[in-house]
Image 1 (cartoon, rainbow over the protein chains, first blue to last red):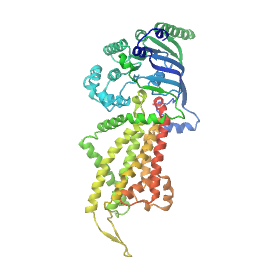
Image 2 (image 1 turned 180 degrees about the horizontal axis):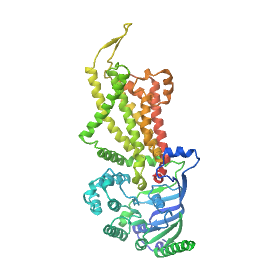
Image 3 (image 1 turned 90 degrees about the vertical axis):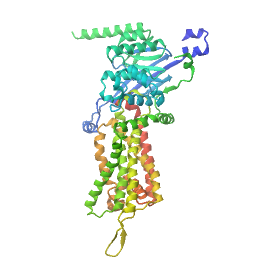
Image 4 (image 1 turned 120 degrees about the horizontal axis):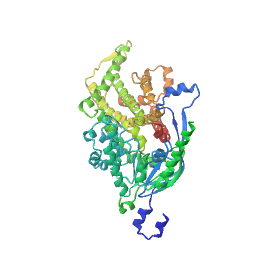
Length: 272
Length: 303
């Protein structure tokens, strides 16, 4: 940011350039969760006799700080369980941090790994409406976007059918269409491009590219490193909840790939 | 994103650790109010999915509680040797309809958060809206039964038998004591406190179900036992003295006692029932809400 301060710019431009969209300040996220897929009272009672506890504490994110200026496309990479998704959900306001502070300027739209439909008995459009209302949009705002969303998702009459009739690809298409058409200030995307068929993947990538070119702010979690390299202008590497590296995509990705490679080789060596 | 759009006031959200385990209450309530349309739409959509909005769906809402009441009336009458009159029938349905409201709210509401699945995991919104949506649904299912109540009450008042029953000493009782009274309008404020009581219990169960998913399997038994322990299938004053001692632990004893006195008999109950109903209503609402809020942070990682 320092070089910008030297240049004389008008106040309105200055806001665009200097404004921080997301500010993550020394954030830690710790939560307790259970090993059980479906915890029940019955199991808890049966377990009580043996004095075992099935609760574990997860330190998902440890002392992470960074700022995302408006217009940045920030890639977040790291191994499975590095805390990427947890961090993103904290930025979306779903999980409050255990320590530190997150400031988000503008409205976020999330396209997280799990998609949009939450009630399989309701139709696609009903699910879209409910998701939008929960996210704080008005009914009118959502309904004016129905046509665009339906057109982009391109799932035909299924949009009027209960979501239990959808294939996973259809649900993914709808989820993508919704998050793209909610006019967010900040778009949070978690592994969303991995679903859908080839044609839709191309369409989705084109749409994302368009947003990137319009200098939208975006946070992107992906294991598709080529996507990260081509779309992001900054990358963060999370490792066991800590920020290992931050910088230009090429620099971070090359180091990351090398580290993964070394780890893999070491594991292979151990086999002998 | 144009430069002009960037400078107009964007909402700034700050996410910080909760102090004392609770989210900041004033912003939470404001947010709850701002997003109330979500609860309304969710309730509408689930009613649509359950066909509650069709003619037969509505009809079922009327027939179902009525059939239920008839079954209990028959049962109680057989046990009592057929001595029950229309006033008892009115007492029975008044209690049963409110109890159905409680039961529906609890069984649906207990699942509200766990069924919220992806939405809870992916969207930041006040999760209290989920049990509140089911509260709205069960209220809308309760309303038609109150319609039946008024119709039946009017019918039995007008056409009901007016036989007198006299005992050996010559003391006679009018078996039909039904008549409309202004006091019955007090049922509305009484119901407000019943709503608070049920809302507190429902939010509590909604949070508890996240930790113990089999709560929904125990609930039908628990509510059924609760029904039998409460003065619905019999009058409060018919209880054995030893049972009445335990009834101070049963919130439904004063609540349904008050409700029955007001709406079925049109008489003003003693002050202790009023105090108990208000206290249970406010207490349950406060405890249920606080428990839910203190646990809400956990839901997104526990589902």
